[in-house]
Image (cartoon, rainbow, N blue to C red; front, top):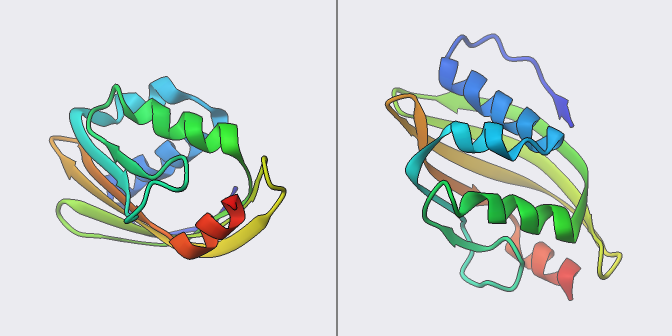
Length: 139
């Protein structure tokens, strides 16, 4: 994981950076602590052909998203390229590359993460990626 420095002082961006760090430590409890109980979490995909695609509708379901990532891919690049924020939302651009454990196929892409906050907690997440590349890597 690499990170570009950002001069913003928005605490929401700090929370997202902390969440990414927790992902790479495999600290699921720290991740869940940042989420509202009724968080709306999903990778934005029209199919369920990649293991982590689909909706996760509570903080109790979100750990399954990370379990699917860890069980199925080896992440080779997760560069945080840029952040933008407003009163409630954070957008993150990520350079993402991985190898699928089952197929040995690799892929690399930019993806976008959209985070929404309420009362200091993450209440909404959407991840957008090149789904065609992901599906191809799994087939």
